[in-house]
Every structure is written in C-alpha cells, then in structure tokens.
Image 1 (cartoon, helix red, strand yellow):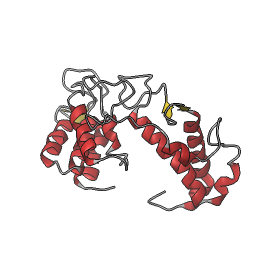
Image 2 (image 1 turned 30 degrees about the vertical axis):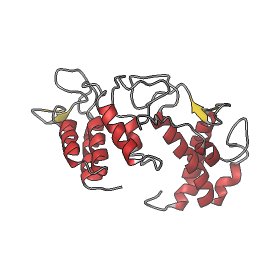
Image 3 (image 1 turned 45 degrees about the vertical axis):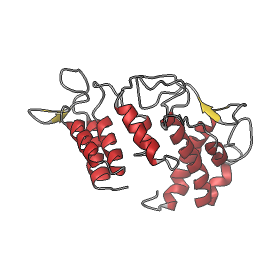
Image 4 (image 1 turned 90 degrees about the vertical axis):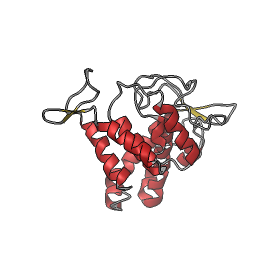
Amino acid sequence: LATTQNLDWLRNRGCPLAQEIAQFWASRLSLDPVTGLYDIKAVMGPDEDHKNVTNNAYTNVIAGYALYFGDLTKCLVSSCDQDRDKAAPSPTEGGNWSDLASRIKLLYDAENDYHPQFEGYRRDTVIKQADTVLLGYPLQYPGLTTTARSNDLRFYEAVTRSSGPAMTWAIHAVNHLDLGEEGEAARRFEQSYRDYVRGPYRVWSEVGPGQSGARNFITAAGGFLQAVINGYGGVR
C-alpha cells in the first residue's frame, strides 16, 4: 500500500483484512492493572526454541503495528469505519486501536541497555535464531535507540546456537550495516551463506554441515537477498 497508494484495493480488500487482524490482536491483550500496560501471553516469537512465553519483543511490536494500521485504514478510506461498532477495539474498554497499541509492553533492561526477548529471559539463555534483533531491521521500530540496537545484536549473537538457520546472520548483517559497522556486517554476511550453500548444485540448506534440515531452503536464500538489496543496497 505504501508503494502503490492503491486506495481501491484498500477499500475493497485491504480494509476488512486490516481490521480483522487488528481485532485479533486487540483480543489477545491482557491488561496489567499495576502498570496500566498490556501483556501478550502464550505466544512463540521467531525463536522456535521458546514457546508459550509472555511479551515476546518481536510479537508485541508487530501487534502494535497491526493495531495502528487498523486505525490508519479508517483515516485513508472513510468506508472502513462502517463496521467500527462490530469490531470494537477491546472486549472490556472503549477507545481506539492506536491507544491500545501505545500501551503494549515492550521489555527493556535499562541497566544493560537491551531488550529481553520475553518475560523472564536471562542473557545466557541460548536461542535458535534472530528474534529481538528484528526490531531494528526489518521492523524499524521507532523507539529503538542506536545503543540498544547495538547491544541487542551483541548480546543475542553470543547466545544464538550454531545449528540455527542461515537467515539469522543475513538479518544481523543488515542491522550492522545500518549501524555503520561494516566489518562486523561483512563477517555476518559471509556467515549467512558460507556453510549453508551446498555443492554440487549450490543448493541452500536450512542448517550447517553435518546437520539435518530442510533442503532448497528458500528462506535462507531470501535472507541472503535481503542482505544484498536491503543491507548493502540500502533499499527500504
């Protein structure tokens, strides 16, 4: 939509979709009466090693985006408002989706200046793949400071297991490039394909040598392309 500005599509197809997604996330919010903020419980973020967690950083940010976008569609196309009563922002309170989005909790450790992946996360906990670091790229979360973004990369690189999928390191490469850390970006970019492209036909594998994983793994190839186009090319 941002690229095409196709309001006809938004009016006929996009509005119902955006509003249903926003309503879904509104239904998943749980108000913390102490903080006045909303938790999202029983989720699994991109890191598939940790299931049924509360306040996964990635999940909470995309939920907020979905809620904001639900309201944006009503600003862009007035007919999107026609089902507003049927799609109430919350089963327990009035207001709009943007208000709910602004009150979703995003965990932040001020002492270490980084974002814990979920409620109760410890910094030495091993993870499978890129998760919280996605707040930088591709989510471009506006509240993310440069130092916290750098620390998120450094902390999670140290605990990402070696048997994780290739696209993790492509995403790390893009984030390092955004921070001007070209040497580290080059290392992560090489890491994203070096052990994952297999001969003799140069087919992408999900995991490194000696491990069993998906073959012709297009997610890894997609990560590689993003590192080239969105990282080194700077396309957004």
